[in-house]
Length: 252
Ligand SMILES: Cc1cc2nc3c(=O)[nH]c(=O)nc-3n(C[C@H](O)[C@H](O)[C@H](O)COP(=O)(O)O)c2cc1C
Image (cartoon, rainbow, N blue to C red; front, side):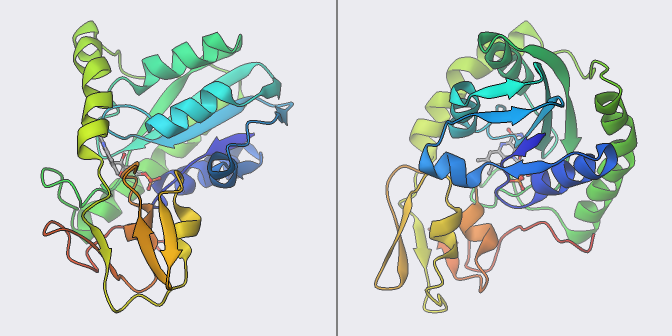
């Protein structure tokens, strides 16, 4: 069973490709995460958990969900990360979570996909050409990675150094606490009040008030609201103009 969260479509795409290759089912965890539903998920085949990378780790809310959800059946767990190029220490956190559940950590794969984080001034979106190239390169690696999963082999990836761990462990929660603010989000008059942003927000930060989104303070900065707005009506302070966003294109 392939479990995933994806804010802007990269991880969903990779999860889907792996599922296709190994002939297994996917389960989008969004609704469960939103509802705080940690009830049992059963799979007779290995679990493959797919996640984007947020600030060198799995998104905090996602890691927390995986920690708490009850997984039964096959004890083997693989991880697949999609990032803009650096997956940081996500794998060591994944290993710890899996072991705390009494399950077998089977390694992880990392896919470099298009960046989706326009809100970060240091992390501009990439051009169309580079996005296409990254998706094509990732696609080429699917048979190798999915083949390992299908054969029950360990997924080998880059070694995470001790230095990376001591920098990242304290840094990421602090960064998330102080930088992941929703205050600058706004919707322009283009907003059609469809409520998609509210439905897709994994941490329930958005409420529709008078047919317009209103953001609470807590936010995962996942970019789901901006990325999936059907009319490009969402902006972020003076950093992101409405319409400037990333969403995985199915026609890559
Ligand atoms: C809040 C946030 C933080 C991110 N941090 C990193 C990072 O540390 N390293 C990296 O390579 N990519 C980073 N990214 C980029 C995403 O991991 C990448 O674009 C991912 O494929 C998005 O997946 P999705 O479309 O399934 O949500 C970040 C994106 C967001 C929104």
